[in-house]
Image 1: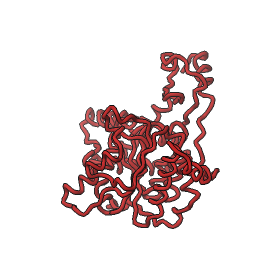
Image 2: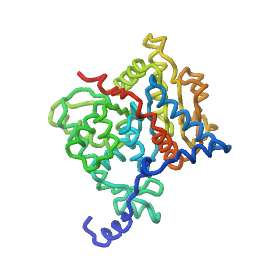
Image 3: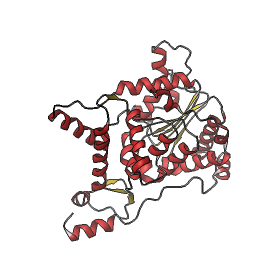
Image 4: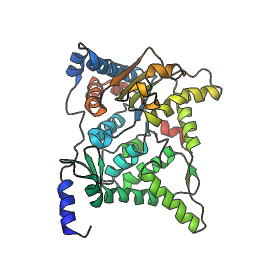
Length: 350
């Protein structure tokens, strides 16, 4: 940006970084215990936290972390990374924005910023600042992510990849070139925790991969592609191998349906002995009255043969305000210390 006035204004707006919460720095157990004696959403959260702790203490349970929405940009990024670091989740299903535009973005050294004021969005556009509610992203930094995804694609053998396989390459890239230790993508690679993005190109990854494909087509060369069917097949394979499973879901949408549908897919493949997800927790503010998939309750999912109605809890709250309490409680109860790592990514090693 060559205009000094614009550069100064942009620097002013991007002056206060979002600081991600550290669930290890405080013990939420007394708060959760007290909330369990209350009513309304407080008691719902306490019960949901208890269910998550039950997942961690069940030696046979594989825990799936499901993330939709923008909580990573808003301050929960290190929270999710800590769950991976401490063997508190075994696989991740998320939106492309969560994995690419937020976590991989910060893994490359970029930052999210608090909006101390919300000027006209046309003004933000003129300064190349993107807005997520009251959080800012430097568009020029985001374009660096687009280009990095392109560079990764350029190094790969031109064949079909699941999103899991491509995100693993992103993790490998961060091990060599990353600038943030506490990256979900990096830690997942190092701990063999597979990450799936069923709508992967709905993110900065899409721009980089389109450029890779277009450039290859112009040069008459083959190119890599993403295989969405492989995503579903691989995740279903994990569910079949895992047996007992639990869902910790933030938001809803495609990631939520994707993991729940693995039970039905396993049945269609002839595995009649695959159980529904035994445990399920969902934190959301979605309204059930509009009939949207993002807001379907866990009880509703039971009618499709996806989850167990006996051990489930909906928490209708903004996730950024309750997930730190849930995760801190589970961290300090230390059930994770007795868990055997699943390392499901190794299932797909050649």
